Length: 106
Image (tube, rainbow, N blue to C red; front, side):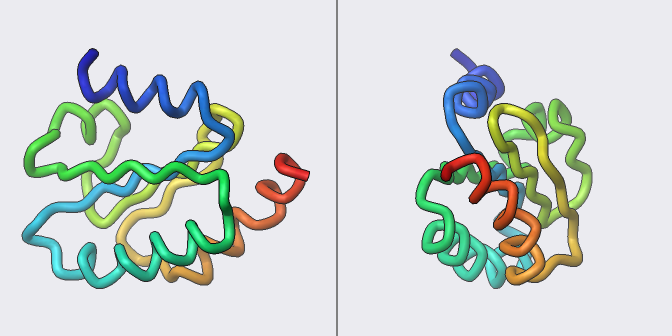
């Protein structure tokens, strides 16, 4: 199973998944990552987070239509719910997810 098939399997079999696209050369990616991951994991227990290093896995980023970093795609109930690229805040991401996530998991 390749990385794309692995990711699609996780998305298909999970309530909520966040794909986080970054690269080692991206300082914004590294500053955002711990805050974002912590906020998502502490607010949404069912979330699975998959990090994609676009410098290694160009095929994965191309498959998901990611051409800038940092980027994230959130899937709820196997469907793409939203995506954000470059300019995002942790609070913005959490508030986007909160209501639909609570409806799905209650």
